[in-house]
Length: 318
Image (cartoon, rainbow, N blue to C red):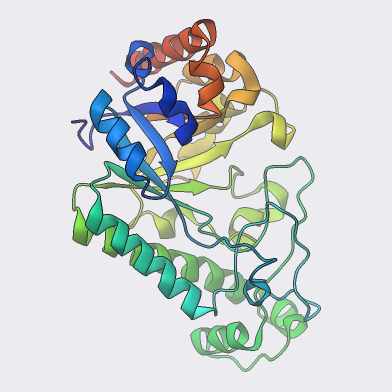
């Protein structure tokens, strides 16, 4: 079985497990899949792959649960499309059910890693033109902020005009606090389980500081709970060039704590250029996930490029 010190390479998505017998041939030693999927665990065990869970935290079907939609600065539910992430964090029943779902999964299975997904405030970043909205201004969220910041602000306008710095710090601390709670659940069940987090792929300065101010993801605050940070490097979807992964890795030392690992997830849609460019980074990724990997591993030529990238990255890590 793969240890927590072994860099992990492999596809993201259970569909790729139909090619599980071929994955090791191309350097893959792990697979990532949604939630605690019994079949996926069985396939991974059969083929010697490290089973890694993608665990959904703060995302839900707003059509079915409109009460979970965060409130914007106008006092109304935020704009959202099919892919928006982030719920109103004052919906404590939902948060508690999420934690119970995690505890149940950890009691029944033994993943090598659990990657926390959608652990952020509301928004969507897999697009060239993100719709960035300040959110979570329901009465309960405002009350929680006022208690934490020791202030008596009552409206979104007052908060953002007079207490913006404290508000954004509160949001980042709130997300980090929930990450700590998820980490306690995971480590209590399996102390050697890797804890990963899927991250907005922006630097702290991009888009006006939206990584921290809008999504409330702060690498330093999350570091005590997270072993591996995984930014979503989906170049085509985000309007970026295929060397985005390499560029991100080579700048990450400026904001990712040095004692934490970084492992990119790349998109098969970006083609072999993205894989090879990432593999050439002077600051290597600690393994690699490949979104849409089923398409790649169904084709020997495409899978061979993945295998070549794995060899290059391993050589950098060694």
